[in-house]
Image 1 (cartoon, rainbow, N blue to C red):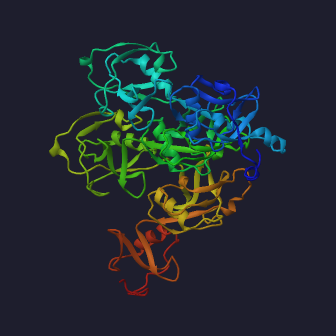
Image 2: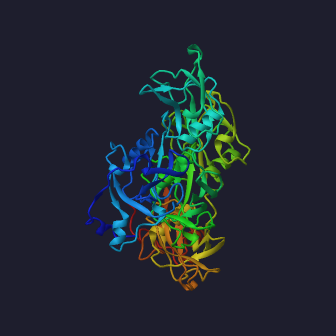
Length: 606
């Protein structure tokens, strides 16, 4: 790639139109109004580099080809890499020009003469035009869903749903570069049109590239009921694999004729939101890093994806070509989506009051008849493993919205709660909302300690259990471990194999939690499987949710306090005996008691 800095000092070449309509064409897009942009310069056809390529440039190409308006300006060889030389770059149209040759641009032959090498074909610019008829989908969540409207007499007219069939829908979706149709909706799903209703019936055969190529017939005005309400499924170029459902897993994209993975650097909730939207999976729940869903196959094809979060598809976001970097699949990006259910009010995303989405707002699920099978499906959909507890009363608080009017009748094997059968619920039968804790995926444990809440940290990664090296291990990391295991707060973070040297490999080092994560898998870490770190540096954790010693010279001496109603209370010395002391010392990993001291030795409680 040539130096962008040096390009700023090159003279801008203004190319004047001289060869007429054969100056530009679109190839590899399936029709003459969509594809990779090719231009003819001095008898040679070649491509356009997508630097600064935008919708204004695309608008001029569509106008020059008599293809209606520009729908989008895909970059990075969206339709496949072109052939020949790259002839133009840094095209700068204002959108009103009649031909592309009237726009300012850099001629890459001039760049070659200065010794710079133009960008490869992976940066070829593309265009998608609406076609002469001009068609759009209105009122949907993105450009590939909505009420079908066509341009007629310079205004937009709603298309009537009478006799509009699957073949007609195939042509609409194809013209808009939205793949194939996925659903016709009844009634006014995307709203009523405000303009006139188009006076024709379409009679497409399904193979046409543009709606205006279909035959039409007159339509009696009085038979129209609603406008056509259509959702297209978009091109099949993103999927989630190896998750617990089709809405969770490792991200795979189809680029350059192959399926591959995405590098997790800079991967965030904005990027995940676009994936969930494109797959019709609702909202992003989390963005697991590394190989949370196992190592992928094929090449890692994209890196540094940068979505704003509003795009309708991942292909519309910026990204870098990652094919040449040979990055290991330990850095594959993942996504967990959920459209229908959430847990709120808990300590993390895997515990809380169960709420479902209804009429675009969240409603509390009633605890009447909500059982273990229902809980299994909720935990599975949220990628939180299985249920560990159904709490009584308002353990996670009362919901402020409405109460959902149905009872779930899940069998437990369903992947999504909306797949379960439901029945009507008598309104008076509800006492509380469902209060649920899921145990999370089984990928963390503490071993060789005195209880399940203390010991050497072991994680499950890459198909094996192993330990964590102590480098940069601190209370923030320990807080996440204790939270994930339902063990309360960290007491101390022992290092240097305090609980004895672990087994297997040391899998992680330099864990970097901020302390608020719901699981250790959500924290940054360095893969150290291929470095022989000795087990004498194994990290440990001691958690306690109920008891502490306060006011002593160290953590193993002091006034005994227990947690009650989210605050600490002093334990009275009346009837507190040696057996009680043995349990306290064991829980705090402090060995055996050595002394029970008399009144206020470690100070009075306040």
